[in-house]
Amino acid sequence: MRLGWAEPLAAPVGGGLLRVLAATWRIRERGAEHARAFREERRPCVAVLWHSRLLPLLYYHRHQGIVLLISRHRDGGYLAALAQRWGYQAVRGSSRRGGDVGLLGVVRSLEQGARVAVTPDGPRGPAEVVKAGAVAAAQHAGVPIVALGAQASAEWRLNSWDRFSVPRPFAEIEVVYGAPLEVGPGREGLRRGIAAVQQALHQVNYR
Image (cartoon, rainbow, N blue to C red; front, top):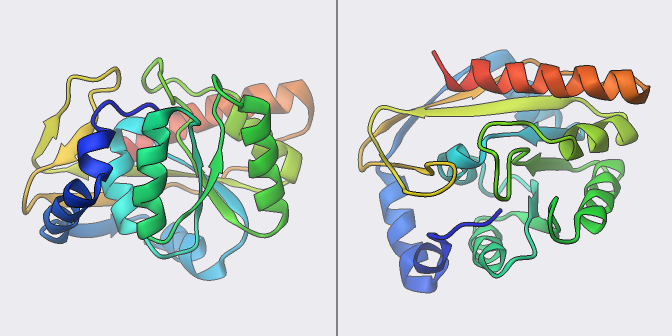
């Protein structure tokens, strides 16, 4: 996940300011039955979210023991430091840097019972286009995929490849959970899985 904004935000002072900002957000859920399954059953799964919606979802799911797939790029290190302070674990790798290592780490985490979060359009896009990695990992481990979305009532959009969203102070944020998706076997199962995840992410991010 390459984040040009990450250095000032993830540094100690920036991280503190970010926590102050996030504490003002008013968050509600949609898809409550899927949220309960995601939170309470603690079954291994792959959570997928668009890179642009990462910030509010990262804050909302802090201290839940979720594993993140984070780029080996320097900016990924800033994100890893912030995520660690918010109670996440990290697997380093991406589709561009250490992709095979990252995918192997995701599969191993899933086989150990973890929930893993992946931005399937990261680290550099194209924005909101699902790549195969997250779906392939779920297929290999035999676990479901859950699409997560976040919609802010007021936000800043950064001048980045994905127009990264930073919710404004006191914004209302709707966190949306999709129904679990199962990935069938073989190449056809992978192809159908990618298409299903693409549709699910569209549904949870747009009213």
